[in-house]
Length: 422
Figure 1 (spheres, helix red, strand yellow):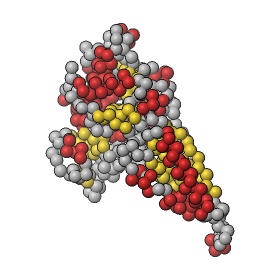
Figure 2 (cartoon, helix red, strand yellow; figure 1 turned 120 degrees about the vertical axis):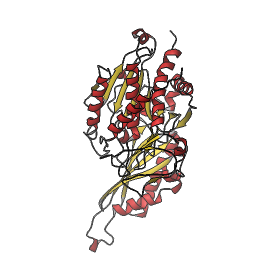
Figure 3 (cartoon, helix red, strand yellow; figure 1 turned 60 degrees about the vertical axis):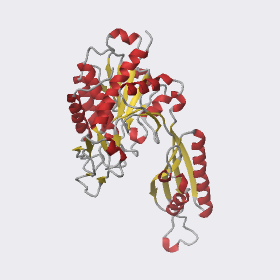
Figure 4 (tube, one colour; figure 1 turned 90 degrees about the horizontal axis):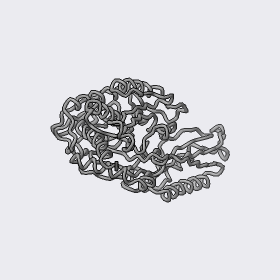
């Protein structure tokens, strides 16, 4: 049976999304608190209250800002046979672009370019946005161009909340148990730092954090963070000859000597990269943060060795400069574990097909909370949520693609019920 949302659910979905994106939940990678910004709890409290209104009596926000809730199996006996499934999305938005004062606009898209009214120099050009052509006749949501929109991942949150609403309104629909989780700090790599998989109680899960209609992602980068520390020697510049060792100059040399063909702006598909994205310091000390990304651990080690070789070269070029490279593991390719649980992917592919959507298996040039959860023992592929141009003022989303994600979530529960031997 194909699931079709009644039109009023589309309106509820849109209203939820517009409400959520107006809450500033930007995370901060330099913070040592958890969550990294207290304002993420503003949305968490809102979601906790709404889940209770939708019938999730156990909805709660924990001390870390995570929100959890349960939709019990129906009928209850299905809880003995059908595995409990988890649906997850993250509340924070990227530190890369402001998420404060989001002013969304809704466009009934009939083709052509879309001007962002708060910054008319920013235009969604049909020629540069091939997915706009796929969305003719849709309602497109953008920001006004002065902030990001927040579809990453408030689209996923709105979709999961609408699944919960639909299940409440359709008591005749049989399904196993559903666990809901909304996490903090995904954008700064700490989304599962305090996540207790055992107490969550799901056997399998799905993040609603993808992009294009039909995308089902079962592979992510392996990811490390490299911190390069350069230590020099400060001397009054008027008397510096033969004495000063300038850490700022060393940092500049190091970044400039990274191989051009190993940067994110020159790679695509399954190609790994090194990404220097944060640099600060002075003559005495400079620090560079470098993202290291690859689909295999072997390629990851290769890129890290490249970085170390460049660091050693800079040390030789500037006598007296000390360069240290420290590498911290962030997450690993979830494919390593998902291959051992093919059923979690097969159910998602089947649910998409039943909805008349041709599924497209993809590898993410990035990571999700599901990357870590999978390696923590909770197999968690990623499903489309509809958003485009993440982390950018040109971010946009199709309401119809969001609604298709809601339908996919409901259909997934049906597939799990039917595919479980009883």
